[in-house]
Image (cartoon, rainbow, N blue to C red):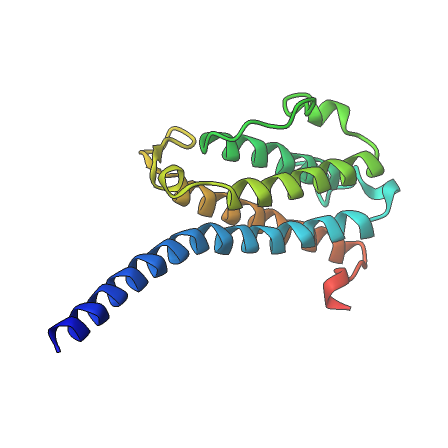
Length: 176
């Protein structure tokens, strides 16, 4: 009886540790999946928006459409950087606003950023996600919280881009 109880106890402890490992990794997967969904929609809008409207903005005081898209990519590299992730070789993050001008280049930059962001978040270790960083000079937060702020940032821009599209009578592709 004691042997059976001991065996069951050990099995439950091992299963509990395994579940904690799976749960911890799924945090990265869950965040990456949400980032993937938002960036997929941003890329879809970038592809649907006409090239001749890329410099259009509803007023003079807000970003034009292209600048939103490039900004999303630039911010992606910046925020991922607080998690210790370096941009791929050859990606000119700082010069992108001035150098990524044509629709096809903007879409390509977004797609590259999209793939990089999702794989980088999925590849972060638990220790990295739990480490403390400063973002925008705010009090320290975990890298996990910084990735959630990144998700919020992209979601805000997605909403703005949807508004831009609707003002141009463009239906977001996922809504058709």
